[in-house]
Amino acid sequence: MSFKTEINRRRTFGIISHPDAGKTTLTEKLLLFGGAIQEAGAVKSNKIKKGATSDFMEIERQRGISVATSVLAFEYEGIKINILDTPGHKDFAEDTFRTLTAVDSVIVVIDVAKGVEEQTEKLVKVCRMRNIPMIVFINKLDREGKDAFDLLDEVEQKLGLQVVPLSFPIGMGYDFKGIYNLWEKNINLFSGDSRKNIEETVEISDLKSDDLHKLVGSKAAKTLQDEVELVEGIYPEFNKEAYLLGQQQPVFFGSALNNFGVRELLDCFIEIAPKPRPKQSEERLVQPDEKDFTGFVFKIHANMDPNHRDRLAFIKIVSGTFERNKPYLHVRNNKKMKFSSPNAFFAEKKEIVDISYPGDIVGLHDTGNFKIGDTLTEGETIHYKGIPSFSPEHFRYINNADPLKSKQLYKGIDQLMDEGVAQLFTLELNGRRVIGTVGALQYEVIQYRLEHEYGAKCTYENLNVHKACWVEAKDVKSDEYKEFLRVKQRFLAKDKQDQLVFLADSPFSLQMTQEKYPNITFHLTSEF
Ligand code: GDP
Image (cartoon, rainbow, N blue to C red; front, side):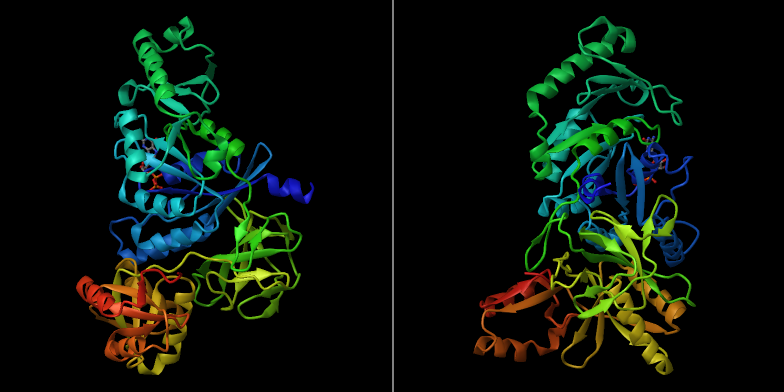
């Protein structure tokens, strides 16, 4: 196959949802269609379960699974599909944000009864900021849920999307009869035990024909006719260009658990979802079909085995081909590196590969050279723009609890931060270290991993910080800026990139500081 064909047949995407909406179940059904797995239950949920085990043990369990589910690749109708796993738990939202830098499109799963939930809102917002093409899948139609039109309104209002239904449910819950596919103009009939089999499809060219009445009964047929008329009246026609620009989002209805409506989703997906897209670097826009390889690290996964401290760095290939044993430039370190065993990912395994194409993800064994956001090229100096760090929500001092192990502690902190587990701030005044996280759960993870992987012990101490604000001064030589540095010294810190950060202790003090120093800007993200 030619280089161009290889690029054109790739679809790299993520599934995002609030926990429990059905992301894992949908992933599994997609893999079943691709023949990548044989039975349901093969894909393990990456969820943090509440229950008997303590939270951090649960995280370790989850971390074990998450290597296996980081990238799930399979082929369907000649298309190479790469699904990138995104944790739904809110404490891991930042992992998901970073993974979204590596996808070319997303599928948003929504529970028909619960509607738009908090995590969905946050994640969709990030996708909208980046104009990522989105398809919405409304799940669990076998249960009683919200009225389809109300739900579509909710999706438009809460998520700020412009929806276009490409399928429509016939009844719901107990009365759920099937799905009318506006895209292919046919009907899928639901029968309760279609869990394993791929369902029958009936072509319906005319909704007013008697066939429809025979299939679903006259009441449901009449309702469907009215509803489809309404759909066609209210919503614009599907426009692929608008979808690709992130301006319009097709919607499908179904039940992942019952494997219902999933094939429609997948068939439409492979037809409309974008092939690998060009990516903006600080220097220039890079096209996937450029000859020279470029790629970037969007995720780092530490080995669970403390005796093998190597890590797996996940690289998204943006352009060219990535080849085994070929030297590539690690741009930040300005160093050439070769990789003798790059991993490619499949449904349930990873394998060493000789060549990978744009859209693919390769896993590189790493002994500590990579950070999230690093760029690899064939020699050109390019820096891909990553997702910026956001101000953490929680802040604590981290203290060394075993003076004999300080080297291990600092190395451990350093590496965990490279992995993106949390953010480190070092106070200007006294060099004390502050760990900032999205959720409280991460403190347990860090403590546990420092002990088990690095043999170091830490304790935490509370610190009253409202937000971390990255400082940008119009003129670093101005008296105003010098005064700010002097007066606020106690609240200043450096992040890992040595950028200056103001740790505001309350919304009020942030506001006062901003008013007092109008020529300084306080950013809640690290890139501005
Ligand atoms: P995730 O947290 O988004 O990955 O959600 P899961 O895929 O683990 O699903 C959460 C729960 O919803 C599980 O108990 C699933 O069996 C169930 N579920 C998923 N899809 C459906 C569906 O279409 N109908 C019904 N009734 N339950 C579903």
